[in-house]
Amino acid sequence: MKMELLERMRRHSQDIPDALAVKTSDGEFATYRAHWSASEAIAAFLRTADIAAHEPVVVYGHTSPLMTECFHACMKSGHPYVPLDCHTVPSDRVANIVGQIGSPTVLAVEDFPTVATRGLVIPRAELERIVADGVRAGAVSDESAWVSGEDLCYILFTSDATGAPKGVQVTADCVDSFARWALTLGGIGKEGLTFLNKASFSFDLSIFGQVMSFQAGGTLYSLTKSAQDDFVKQFRAFMESKVDVWVSTPSFVDACLAEKTFDGALLKNLKLFLFSGETLTNATACRLLKRFPKAVIVNTYGPAESTVAVTSVTVTPEMAEADAPLAVGLPKPGTRIRVVDAHGSDVPAGRHGEIVVEGDTVAKGYFGREDLTAKAFGIADLDGRPVRTYRTGDEGWLDAEGMLHYRGRLDLQVKLDGFRIELGDIEENLRRLDAVETAAVVPAMRDGRVTHLVAHVVSAEARVESDFREGLKLKGALKTNLPPYMIPRKIVFHDALPMTPDGEVDRVALAAL
Image (cartoon, rainbow, N blue to C red; front, side):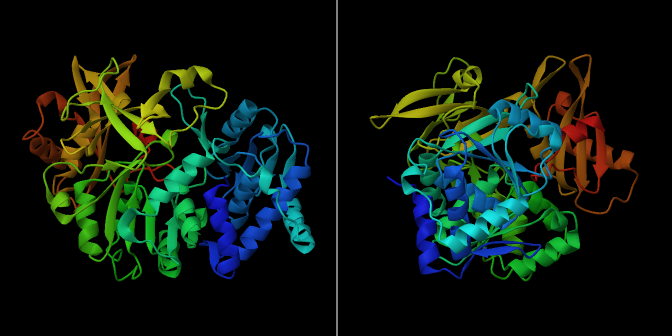
């Protein structure tokens, strides 16, 4: 059975050939007909190239339409693609990833680092020639080679505690199952919508916008680095995009909310906010509901190892205004969520433990890392069929209705003076204070142990006293909900928290301050 995503793309190229498939804030674009034809041409070329069957192909670049055309060309020629963003993946890390794969073919939409070159590198000019010649000759892919079922669709390299990136292997069936569910979120279900993508293609959050847009016949609108680096240009891009569906981390929308003009008058078409990758706070949800009263907010959860997201919940005003942190939702069809103790046994509803994902979107493990795969992945029976399982390393709990509540990374727990502390607990209490816009807490280390906690805070209002006195006020306010050992010793104020290129709070940068 052919991959649904590719079949949809073919249908769009025939039914809505002149509709925009992709566009960037720098003005690059491709229609569905052009996108399909370009991927056909590159796929035909890859089938004649000296590449072993099912060997991964690296696609290097940024947000150009040629990137997604290359992704689809790889899928059509039977090769999983490895997306590497030229602005967010350092050259040495690129070299490490290429080394793990072997000597892969590289489709270089942007200049490829010399230090990482091992095999054949096809530069942009050559790719454009391949497309032009192939389109002129009516090149078509070999449909018998298309990835399908348990074939790998892409390999996404993510961070590992060892310092060496690990490649998450996601199958065609995983992507199709995720896409079918994703299109049901928020009740948008119609063609012709514009999906905002801020994430780099090296980040799994970008898959959200890609599959939803391409399945629905919409437009994937990607913010380029030049727009992300210039707030004025970024807001201009928001208006020009006429975005219908917003996909990002909560941190990115927090940064936008700092600008008072970020509201429904600016984004008149906006129908849906989709959040993943980080905790969505009650405060952020309340502000969005107030600024965008016509938009739906959907909170989701899921690691890259389970194809982007596996749970969802529509956030209501009542949920946002409640004292309890927001839930991350119920599992998608074909997925079971378990919460287990240290021995792998299920814990009762309401009890905290490690979140385990079981189902049809769990990845095949880590590329070339059987050791890591054996530790994190397994097999279970779900409704009479075998499915893969993944131990996430995340802490959470299930309520009586089966709704998942996320507490944070187990490895973000620290011990201070013998007390076990969840940093997310302190952060959530800080964000509930009227004077706090957002906050992140990091441990201060000395000789391998935690000596104290440091809170990094963005104020919600202008500070009238010295930072020292304002910090004392916050500590005093925290004491109403937290025990003394959880009160940060030091509070540092910022105009904005540093973020990674993919829109998450940069805890490494904060710890280095």
